[in-house]
Image 1: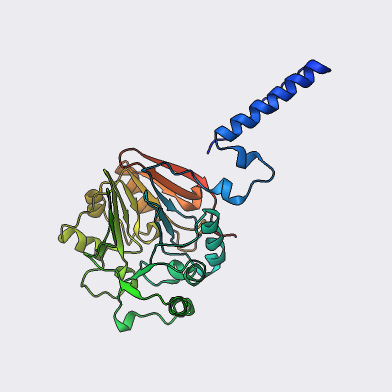
Image 2: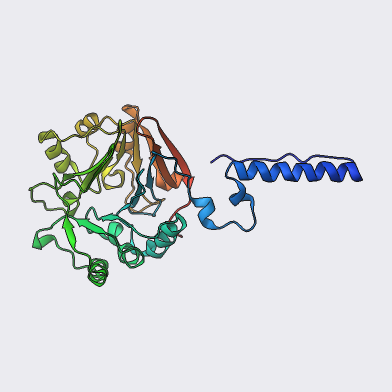
Length: 320
């Protein structure tokens, strides 16, 4: 959102000066109200006014939330459904709840957990307590991969308290299909893996002519399976797997997806070195526009099913 500057007028002292000043203030109030800037300029404005992007009729918004070193995406469908994918780490739980409230959200229609690593589910118990969802999706795991972490247990407890059941996220399941919009799971399939990352729910969202692909932390073995299965991979926007790690976004996979934009969700100066330079170079060589939550804050992709635009530097959902 660009900055606006206001030039001061220099009317003469006296009645004419007062008259011009009054007219100026009236015009300023009219302009700010009509352009939606009133809430930002008014001293009585609320955080919600500065956070929310107006949603036009027939418009889809896909938010890539700056959650620090973790993942969280929020989808606002044209029909008004609210969908959350992942919830960042434990330290971000309360801040994410506040962020969602500032968006005017009172309930969540759907919550998707890509996989139960702490940087994806740490804040989930707080979210579930604040917004009990209508439906909750998570991949089924082999017993050897079921976490014993505290955040996983707290998430299960919150689900139990809400009376939510876990619906299995797996390839072929279509959680949502309505006019012009389709959300489907491309993975996990039936494979078994040593890494929990590879059980990630891979989500493809289609609206009109535009497609979005959310990879969770899925790594190269999953990408190879998706290619072998001839899964519908083409997407305008790719949420890179595993925070831009070189374990993911292989060259063959990137060519199949052929995105115009890629989003990398990671924390500034994180200890893992995400995103890896190898992946940044690969994306640049493919002429893909790179968006990063660590350098550009929360991002929002907006489409009417035809045109596609990005908003950057929107408020984060966590505090240092």
